[in-house]
Length: 93
Image 1 (tube, rainbow, N blue to C red):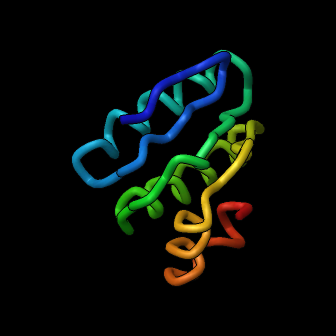
Image 2 (cartoon, helix red, strand yellow):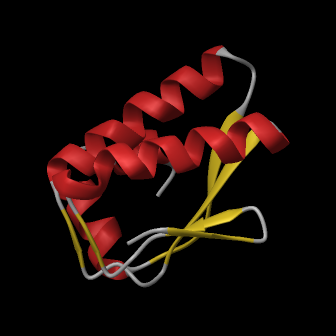
């Protein structure tokens, strides 16, 4: 499960559809407070397409609002999953 630590959302080892809504709320809260959503995905060993698609939508929305989303770190598995779905570039991975 994702946790906020010093303004950075630290993704859990497994992120899936069951945590996507909570993840979105936490990222929005961070972006509202600092005009940027920072994510640490270094611990991710499994992520589903729903979560990655939600992150793309959030990235687009933040960009339109004049904010941004950036990665502090990302695991090889997170990068591979995003690449396989064609989302790595849009997510900045």
